[in-house]
Amino acid sequence: MWGAPVAVALRREEQWPLRGPDVRLILDDPAMEGPLAGLSAALAWAASLGRDRVLVTACDTPFLPLDLAQRLEEGLRPDAGAAVAATPGRLHPACALWRVESLALVRAEAAEGRRSLRGVAARAGAAIIEWPAEEEDAFVNINTPEDLRLAQARLEVISRP
Image 1 (cartoon, rainbow, N blue to C red):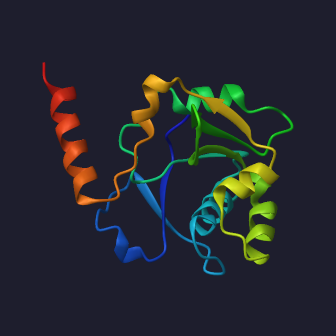
Image 2: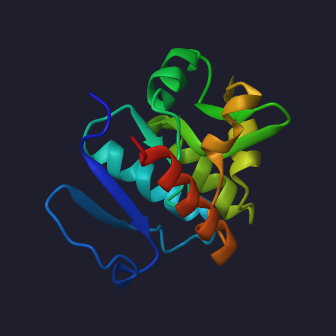
């Protein structure tokens, strides 16, 4: 089953003001900086639960495709450490299905001063799972007040009957 349990990886617990029984907070690996710290924490958490894979997404991508988990799972080759979402000409390494066994690689990358999700995905032999160009907006990030305004307008259009 995908979607349960759900965890949010953070640098500090106070970054997540919402509390509830359905979301577990896990702290970034303190020995790392950047996105690999959250990935390392997610992989370690999944391993502690006896899982062999973990689906990770960025918290600032609110329009992810409904079939994200399914398509990544279907595309995860036996020899790949991960399956990463992509749209034509663009890799989305924050939206990926990772094998828990990739934790050692992630930690090694960080120990060598590397912090790139793209780089660790490449070294893990990640399968690249393409979405068509018309679904590119599904992976849009909200990083600025203007991005947020555009996303809110999009939600208004989507939610109209």
